[in-house]
Length: 184
Image (spheres, rainbow, N blue to C red):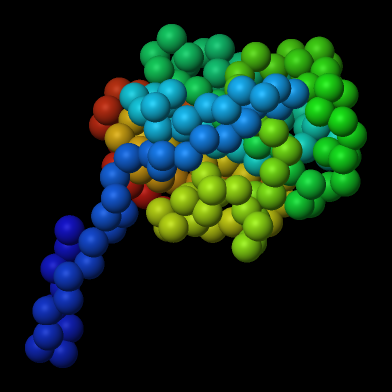
């Protein structure tokens, strides 16, 4: 909580009043299995990414996989959300999309069903990210770093590659528990 004095009046500002991940369930790609985000990932540091297997940023899958392998034993998970909001490639069937990500890009982190990530039709997780002070993605491969206590720490633009030192430092800080809320 922050108290502000302005023009002789006190204002109470509560940042991210509802701590913790949202109690929502989302379907995994090429599956009927629903994952409750809060239950499954409540103590993990998350990198939530809107993806497309068929855009010019798709090479970032390898870097995301490298981050996942490097930090997963410390409680880090990449969550990928394919979307049709910015490219039309995700219109292929889910089996083809799953194969593209798993076989071509060697992805082992969780892939969720194709959904909207921007605007009024955004899935509930991306709506939550927006409510936490983020913004809707404007193109594929925007990244949102979420702390173990379920707070949005920082967002990274699509052109921030997975091997960018700023991203690695932010992840390491969160895993060490010394991260602070930062906005970009």
